Every structure is written in C-alpha cells, then in structure tokens.
Image (cartoon, rainbow, N blue to C red):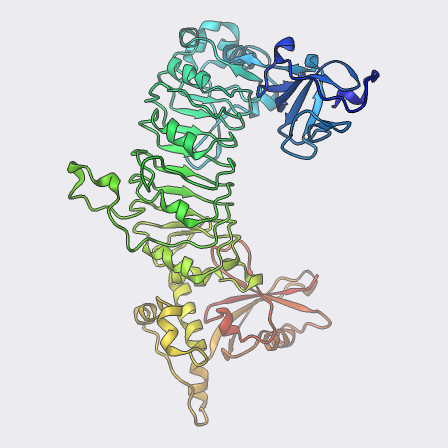
Length: 557
C-alpha cells in the first residue's frame, strides 16, 4: 500500500523540485529488487530513494511487477521516477521493504522449517514438455533433523522466498554438493555474478530455473557451465544480445526457455544466422512479440534443434527457405563437404495463437524435412468463424504431420480426411478455374490418385435410380440436444448438394422434432470441439461432409 496515503504532510513550497536520490542513506540502490515485508510474492524494483515533497522522512519509489501501485512515479505535479505502467508505482517507507535473503538462508528456510502446503506445491522443476514435475527429496525428514543431510539433496526449490544473493562457492558446495535441479523462480536475483557463483558451486547442476527474476543488462564473463542442460529464463527481461553472451558459457545446453521476455528481434552478433548452440534441442520463445518470420529464419541452421515453441507471438506468415545457400558458419575447412538444410532436424513447431491467415503458410510446412508435430490453433487460418480450415483439411494438406494441435493423427483419420478433402475439392471444381487447381490445392492430384477417387461430371440426361444412388453420401445423424430426449442415431444417404438449411429440415422430419431451432455440427476425430455448420445456404459437401461423416444435431441456446 502507498504509505503516503496515511502520512501527515509537512509544509513546503509548491513546485520545489524533488530531492536527488540518496540510496546510500537507507541502504538501497536504484535498480535493486525488493519485496514487501511479509509478502515475498509482491516484488518490485527500486526506482527512487529520497525525500518526497510535502512528506517527512525518506521514501522509496518502487515500480511493482504486479502493476498494483498508485501512480506512474509522479506525485503532486513532481516526477520522481518513471514507472512501467500508469499505476504500477508507489512510495513506501524503507522499513516496509525487504532486500531479501541469501541462497543458503532460503534453503534452510524451505527445508529445515515447517513448510506450508503452498510451499510444497512450489517444489517442482520443468520437464522437457514444460510441465511442472514435483521433486522427490531424498530423506526429507532427516534433512529437517540434521543439516549435513543436505548433501543428499538432488533437487531443490527456493521459489518466492526473496533470495537475492549467494554465498561463496565453497560455502554452497559444502552444504549441497550434489544438487542437480534448482528452481529459483520469483526471487530477487538480478546479478549474473550470483548465478555464476551458484553454478560454479554446484558442479552437478543440470536444470536451472530463473523464471521471474529480472536480470541485469550487463553480463560479466561467466564460468563455463558445462553441466547445465536446461536453462529457464522466462520473464527475466532478457534480450537476444544477452542470450548470445550467456551462450558462450553453455556448451552442453539442450533446452532454453525464453518465454515472455518481450523479444521482437533475434540478433546474431557475428553472422546472419545464430551460431553455436550445437546441442540445443528445444528452444521456447512463446509469449514474445516476434512479428517477422525472417527473425525465425535466423535460427534455421541450429543443427540439433528438434522443437521450436512460438505460441502467442505475432507471426502472420511462415515459409521455408528454398533458395538457401550454405551459410558462413559452415565455411570451415572441415565442413566444406557438408550439406545442411534449414531446420533439418526440426520435428515440432508450435505456432498457436499467432496471426497466420494464408494457405501458403500452411502448405510451406510440407517443406520442412522432418516436421511431424504442429500446433496451429487460434490462428485466423483455422478459425471456422472466419472461414478458416477445418481439421480434416489441415491433415490432408499436411502430408507428414502425425500430431496436430496436440492430438494424434491416426492412419484412419488421415485416410478419411484425405478422401473428404478430395471430394470437397472435386465438388468445387466446376466453379473453380482448373488451371489454378495445382496452386490452390497442391496435394489434390496426389491424393486423388492415392485413394483411387474418380471424378464424375453430372450427366446431361436424366439419371436413373442406380446412377443417382451412386452419387449419394452416407451420413450419420446423432441428436445431442437436451430437450430432444434419447433418440437412436440414424444413417441416411443424401445428395452432396444438400444445403445445411435443407439438412436441418430433414432432421426435424427424421427425428420428429417440433418447435426446436437446430444447430448442426460435424464431429471430427481428434478435434477438441465439433465444427459448427453456420451457413444454411452452403452445400454440405463444400463443408467437408462425406460418406462416414457424423453430424451432431443440437438445439440453439
């Protein structure tokens, strides 16, 4: 809470400039990370230390991470500091702020005291799939009895305890020499020197999580962190230039998580492409501000990269560089005969919640040599309400995909999707210019031949019963509306030109439904939600309905 609201103002001339910062007087420095006394989760950055016009004593201007302050750093017409948000700053008495504790103090606090359930829940690490995995502690009860049993500890979490500094390497190593996994989420750490000290003291450390620690811009020369395999720097305010500097100390890194760092550019320091990271398999850049796919192409020659996480960025278009040339990073004499393709080992590409809206981006995914797992959900191109592609069309257009939006694409679903897709395209061929067919539907001819589907143009004469029945599609209709009662599913043969509106009328007749406004959905295997058939004037075949399709019959709310 802003303590100025409870203080008694003292007189002073209006318009007087703010007193210059005097951080030394209260033991705080500008840029220092602090938390509110009694609440280690309310964290902020010191932006001002000194007097405030009209109020007695010294004050600390804090820019709070949670944006729950009182102002933007100005008060009474005087600007003391500039906060990130309009109401993220406030003035606080120094006695109500804590500058934190040391690493070993945090360790003792978490494991030698009586921990709460909330604290127990914070004891986790991140798996390769970025999921929380609870840490198993060897002899935890004994640890609480005897300090020397910290030596048995392999994984530890001191998250949200206000850790702001580290002891010497020898002191830390003497207490926890065998630590392999360390979670430092939500503390007050900012100095890279402290991170270097911790890693140097823990030679077996493989997983380090620094999420929600605002790190300094300047990075000194760090020791070689040869054991680190997983480094999590989510929401640390880190730039790509800092990543390039940290990279030099990470010869064995396999996973690097850089979520929510406001990154918009990837800037290699010595070439057009990011070099090094020879062992990096997973790179997580989710929740950043990357707009241009050209930035992502700078990562295309990371030879070990298998997973690239780009959910919740601002990408509008993606492509595969067909005209690539061997980059300068392969010009060494021992690499002269090496042929390397962009993203040659990339198997998983997560692109959910971006702004992709073109078919060319979808079709370009076929060009990635080993891509099998793709996420495209929450992009305009797959939003049915905006005319986006349904799941079966995505599967048919993407030849090698085995996982789509987190759901497995089975052989059966692939076959059915490809057949439905071919029939959909054939139904539209009369209106579409045939010369554009290959451009609009690159896999059509291939899939048509693969599944032996013949295209029959409508006869100009009167069709006989046999020919008419051969053109029908078999559709299963299933009632799911709450007021419809229990009704057995029906399988009906329908002309492919049946419109959505006509099918609603038929459903009313088939199921004897009266005074109920219907909504129809396509039930798709592997899709979390059924596809709504919105336009009553559209033919069902144009929406991908084919033989074997299940249509859900629901009622409007």
